[in-house]
Length: 318
Length: 223
Image (cartoon, rainbow over all chains, first blue to last red; front, side, top):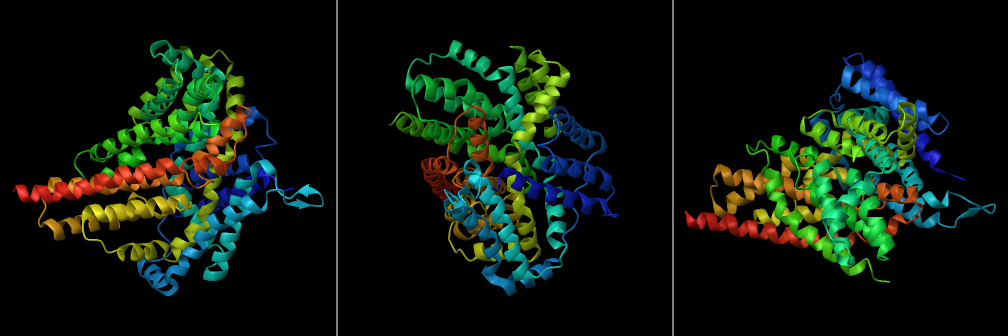
């Protein structure tokens, strides 16, 4: 049976490749730092399930120390020139989209095909993780399609992975760290404390009030944290699950899907979400640092109202 | 109240522009300590949670093939395709981009757009050019407003399109969190419930973009 561990081995191999390309790049001043950062990350994918928790935690701290004390090097220049890429784009035309579109197509197909698919009476893939495993398989299929079609030098995929990973840099690890922060918040009982504060200050004795507190809370807390991923575990453990779902009998699917999107409304309003709201101001050479946020605020507020309406209309329907 | 120190560290750390990854890890450790656990327990608990959240990072597996295609001119090709969408005004051009961005994000192709790849080289210049052809010369303030709207449209398109794709980070996070609470949900049903908000986002932001056209025309008439 194929389990998530298969996908983690793929991730580990890719990250190990990124680390090795960095290590061998004599032109990079920070090659040892980048190799250490991605090498540790690779080890956590390859062996993390078998290592003691304390060692895994310590490895994350070492990654952060490499990042803060040693600093990471940026991405190398592109391997092909603009003229070469334009010639290639003209040669391949829209066929270039085929390998990229293979990923969603195979993921979707796998999601349906692997459901209840048995080999010798055993499920072929872990039935609780079909989507993720299909995604992992689809990236391998897409890479094979791309390699057969484009016939690049053999080292190109891993050299390109290194270029893109070093461009994204530490931000690649941030969503995972935020998910772990959410787990720590849960361990420390942050959700109940926030929920206690909300319930103390706002009367939540009707189903609609619970929904409104949850959607608006998601947006506000996301604006404070700059990231809906960080707000979701706290608000959902504090208000979503105990009130909307357990007390008033709402649907957990509608609550969490629309709740996350309410958080995205908050992302549109905050300088904390620098990648989306501050970086483009610099990139587009606009003098007002908050120009993009100002352009987004009316849409964010109207959409938050729409989300609150959608959730209160559908979450309690059975 | 003491465990809330983690939130305080995140807010202060981000405001002071410290590295976000370092801030988040520090906040996690501090939260555990403030809740009265020992340092080794906290580091172990954090390590366990980090390892259990590895599935959030699985999206990066797409990078080898995306990099390979970029090397062969994927972005250049995407630019040619977008530039063939001929629309007259700034608002309509951004509306078309909003639709393309939402649809491609819903197919999992979030990296086909973006501020560096698409907005600066293509969308913002095209939006400015559209205003110049329809209302004539534009002042700097108007030019900056158009650029800000180009960036905003990219953000709104990707935020309210990507959740329809079943293997995006936020859907994985929702499933991971609910599973930690003993609730199993299907990714496909979460994705379906992203559709109503996606439609609302398109209508709300689309109307605002068409109003932007009227403001641009009105500003010209008022002169």
